[in-house]
Length: 383
Image: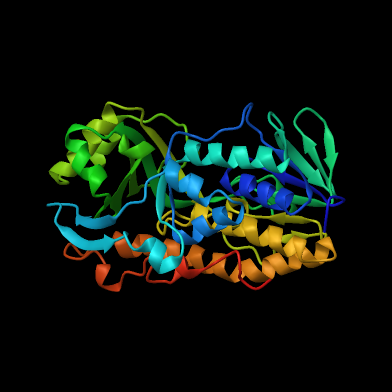
């Protein structure tokens, strides 16, 4: 498939941008539609495991992203009450072991690298282009414009409009809420940035890692909580939420809460989707990323799955004589893996937040590395 194949990508997040770049580099005519008034990403961090970085290598920006982020050499899992290390993980060997680095990065820095790649590849980038409906080979924008393409790719997140072509069931609340903050990596935050990781306890956990050259520490607090189901990345929160939720946790946790209270703090409900039986409608519409398989974040693989989807979709279309064949190859290559990761991510929340105060399920922990997720290579997987 070549320049005569017109692609519309709905959604300018990490997965959408990567898909647009990959398909444009493969010679297709790609238009990317972003609902926001300008392209960009929120102020938060993201972890890119080696399998995710292989996707970025496919479009030529792996090392640029690695330089813009941080390659941690170690991580740890700590007890909520006294901070003792329950498990230590070495990360210095990731390139040698998996053929790609393990990177933590500010989402805006990753998006900036994707934006440069999209412009260089000739992607048509349209902002303030929210899609409100889709039918046949068309999408309808909020201002009434109708655009047509040979392939429509929905990468528009957990509340995907394009997914309505497959089902109308809304996202469901997972029972977890989260708070996020970016705090300066200074004072008592320096040791936590230098040795990133997770504090775990019954029904709650906290993730931290450095971004922006180690100048900022990304904090994400998770808790099981009923009665609050608002989904969205930019809902302001009060530090009193954290103080009450993590009462009695160790001094390091109290220090992180204090730092979050001096920064901008946001809260959101974690919503997800159940697996679809198929990701193709009318041999021309497909989904990737959260639109296809929104999952809980407890394996840290939401972004990685979107990046893998993007590359495999591009490869499948490029290798096929027809759109229908390309989309079928894409689904065949990706559906089983993403459904497995969805299920394991949900199960991991239960394992890591058990009531067992000694190990919190670490004896039976199935994390992203032990599950073999890092060995996957979207550049070469059979299509």
